[in-house]
Length: 420
Image (cartoon, rainbow, N blue to C red; front, side):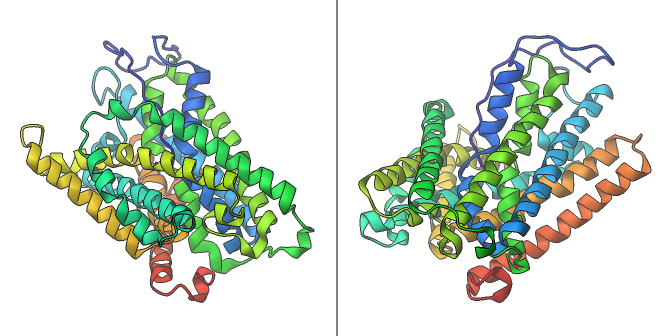
């Protein structure tokens, strides 16, 4: 969810199960294109929350937790793909081999699994929209001379108008705007940090702060989760059997980027690190320009992220193109809901943590190992044990972090949420 990935139109007719030891060659995306798309799908606005996550846990603990999160996230993405391959080998799913994330849950747990994955996907998408609005509000408040809540409320008519557009193709060019804005934002933070506030000696930073674990867990899951997206990217590859190597190399690159950005930004600004990192950069004309660029990029991504949630809800309510007024009412209600929550919880740190812990945690750490074990009966005892530990610990951590972060939203001074 964190980033907006590209989609592919690929002719996969006539494709069934992948024959054992026989590579599949067909028209589609190559290794390099798939590598790039995975990175764009994973890296998004969540990277901007990593500096405050390091502030919450300390430099050493934050580094170790990020490395652990990267490893576990890569593993959960890999087993989703391996589960899809197992389903294809068993002849399950459509003839063209297109198996979506929701299909995996349905094949494993029936209608209950399909409902759980649908709920998690909807809450993740709506949560992403809320995170966008909170970031935009906090980011532009000083420049606009009004409160963050007023910024968000003033955007509601525009958000509703964009949400009513039913053809996502209208927003296709905006992905390039988002990519360019994110590169500009990250580069600006690095430039300012190294020139105006270079890192100090390591002993001057907090190294371990266990109280920040709930915040870090939520943000970490939010920034690494792209399970639904990677399924689509794998389907679009010319040689699907190469996709695991694409995942491995992509996550290595992303992990280095995340570690560098999160740790260095904390070292730049220390305990003054803001949940909106641009608030640490001063108020020069160029910084204001960068703030506007990243805010516009997130604004135009809002309807793209909202669209899958609205389509799913419309389908559940049996509302389609033949009921345009009902469909429009649902979309307007979703916009209103995201605006209200963004006003009530005006903290980018809290919102990204909550979305990661509550929604992404289920999709990332609970469903993948359970589905994998169900469809891969040949797993050894060590791998089975590891997957059970991942599912149980992922569920417990998600529940604990959700409650803790919600408590932080109610009582920002609570000690177990780092004083936020």
